[in-house]
Length: 455
Length: 158
Image (cartoon, rainbow over all chains, first blue to last red; front, side, top):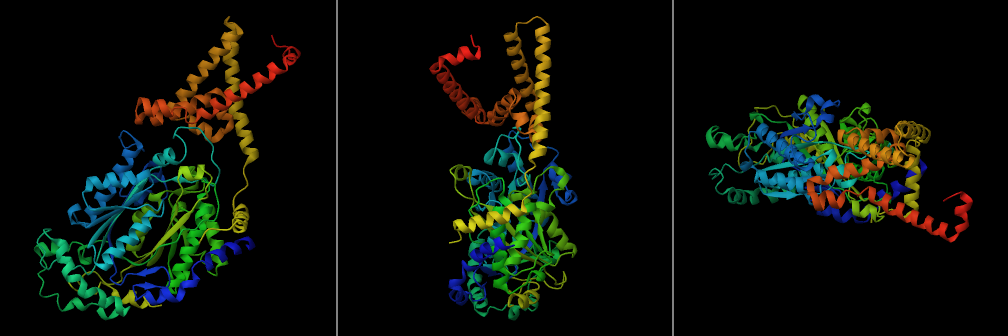
C-alpha cells in the first residue's frame, strides 16, 4: 500500500542515527538499540487469569482460572469489582506458584484507571512493595519486561505482575455512563473485563544461603549478587555458565526451608516458560485523533516495536510460533500486517491479536477486545497454557497502548501510542534433571537460549 | 521524534480509510427510522388515547411527555435502553425517552459518588449540552421572532 510507505519510512528512520553507539553499550545484556536480553532466563512460575461474564462466554472461556457471573461481582461499584478481580488473579497466581505474598519482593501492576487506583488498592491488600505502571493497554508487557529485568539482574528474586481492566470502569472514565444508549463506529473496541497475574522468578536465586525465613533477604541477595552479575554481563554469552550447578547440588539438602524457599524451582511444578527478551517501545504519534479508532492509532507503534525487536535480535518473524499483539483488533491488525510488509517483514502467518482471540465476532464487541486485561488474560490464561502443552515454543507478546486521556483528546490532541514486547520461550530442559542452586548462574536451558540470543 | 508530520498523518489516514469498513449509513438510517418511528408512534397512540379520554390537547401532550420520560428511565434502569440506543442510534437518542436515558444513565453511574457531588453534579453530564444549546437556540429564535414581529402573524401564531 503506497500510502503506508511514508509511515514505514518515519518508523524506520527514527532511531538509526545512534545505531553504532548503542551497540557498544550492549555488553550482551542489550542487543541492537532497544532490546534487552535476559541471560538468566527469568521464568514465569505461575500465571492466572480471571474473566467477566462476556469473556467467559467467549472462545477462550475454558481457559480462565475463575469467572464471574456478573460484572459487578456483588460489589458496590465497578471499580470495586475490578479490584476484586485483580486481587483474585494475584492470589490465584500466588497459590499456583505455592507462594505467599510475603515471598514476593516486588509487585508491578497497572490498569487503566486514573491514578492507577485499581492496582494500588490491590497492592494495599497484598502488602508487597509495589510499583504502579501505566502504559495503558501495554502495561502487561511493561510489567513482564520490567519484572524479568529485575529478576534477571538479581534485584528481585520473585516479582508479581498484575493487571486488570473492566468494561464499565473504562466506559465510565473514558467514554459515557454505562447505560447510555449511544451508537459506536465499527472501529470501537470492547474493554475486556478481567484480570491477569503472573509470578516471575529468577532462576539463579542466591537466597538460601544465610536465608533465615525472610528476616533479611535483601542483605543476603546483595552479598551474593555482585560477583555473579558483572562477569556474565561482560561475556555476552550465557553458555559458559550453563548448568554449573550440578556439582554444588549435593551440598544442599533438598528438603525443609530450602525447598520451601525454592518453591519456584522447575521440578516442583510451575510453567516451563522463560522470558528471553524485552523490547520497550518508543512513543509513536501518527496524528490520529479518533479515540474510537485506537487500533489504527496503535498499529504503527506495534509495527515499530516488532521491527525493532526483529532487527535487534536478528530474528525473522518465522522464528516465532506466534507474534501476538495486545489489542489492535480487526482493523489495527490488518494495518499492522501491511505496515510490517512495507518494512520488509512478511509476518501474516504468525501474527495474531489478543483482542481478536478474546471474543467471538457474534458477541457484539465491534472491532474486538481491548483493555489492559485483554493481553494479560489471553497470555496468562491461554497462551501460556498452550506453551505448557507444547503447542507453542516461542512467542513474541507485543502489547499496545494508547496513551491519551479524556482531557487530551477533548482538547484536540492526537493519540500517542506505545508498544512493548516480551519474548517468551518454552524452557526445553526436562523437569527434574537439575535444580538451580544458590549462587549458580546456569538457569535451566541456558544453552538453548544462548545460541539464539547471539543471532 | 516519532511524531508524524502533517503529510505523514494524511498519508496514514488515507491508508487507514482504505482498511476501515465504510460507515453503514443506510442501515443506520433505516434502524434510526424504525426505532425512532416506533417510539414516536407509541407516543402518538398514548396521546390519542389521552385525548379520547377527554383531556385537553395541551394537557394530553404534557402527560404523554411525562409518561415517556418515565418509560425511558424505566428501560434505562432495566439496562435495555443502551441496547436500543446501540441499534437505533439517533432514533433512540432524539425522542424524549433518549433524553431521559441520558439523565438516568448518568444518575445511575454517578450516584456512587454521593448524592450531591456525584448524582447532583454529574446527572446532566450528557443532557447538559442539549439543555444549554436548546435554551440558546430557543432564545435566538425568540429574539428573531420578536425582531420580525410580523412573521408571527404570518405564521398564524397567537
